[in-house]
View 1 (cartoon, rainbow, N blue to C red):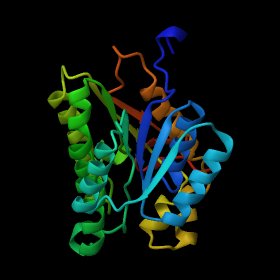
View 2 (cartoon, rainbow, N blue to C red):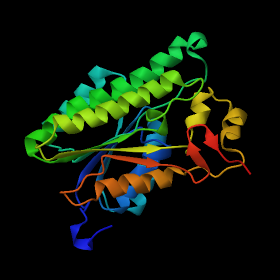
View 3 (cartoon, rainbow, N blue to C red):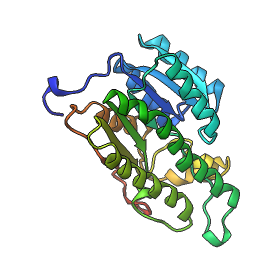
Amino acid sequence: MGLEGDIMGLDSRTVLITGASSGIGAACAKAFAAGGANLILAARRGDRLHEVAENLCSTHDVNVRTVVLDVRSREAVESFVQTLESESVAVDILLNNAGLARGLATVQEGDIEDWEAMIDTNIKGLLYLTRAVVPGMVERGSGHVINIGSIAGHETYPNGAVYCATKHAVAAINRGLAIDTLGTGVRVSSVDPGMVDTEFSVVRFHGDQERADSTYRGLTPLSAEDVADAVLFCATRPPHANVREMILMPTDQAAAVHVIRK
């Protein structure tokens, strides 16, 4: 962890988290709130988002702002960030968490609507937020973009070519943004987990809970809180240090399709 005095504090810093209504996003919101950061939580599901915000406000002395936002809408993203700027709200940390997998099929048999949902959310949505927020960071000479990638951004597995392609794109954007912002004071990181027990598989299998549960049967996957711990580690490194990429895997998983089930 380094010297305690070198760790970057979160008090009064503002963190914008997309996909914050559940799973990794909600866990990260809780971790940042515990560290004293003020939060801007964005997601499509307003009721779930409101519930997350209420719980945080009742347990932590931080400001929590929510916005119902679909990152796939360029106009909505730009309008929201312009509103923040008009209110002189500076985003210190952008956590690009919103993302999903849809379907599990070969390319030749894949559902094009599933492809478009993944491409529009995982790639274009991430780019829309990054393009809208990073100029302010560059202007202020400080900021941190943390992208939630995946082991799928480092490997490709059967029936997952398009999802893997979107996460390979996140890895490329992450590396390219680090080059583009070199010397500006902006840091760029990614946390790339393996199997995490969230709603991920339920969404992938279009609500089939039994099939989703079978994904994790016989092994111990990561929890959303495990990923949040990794994100917090990246965010609290001293200013001269940056975690460019972190691969976080369950002990029961060696690679995307190599797991041990008991």
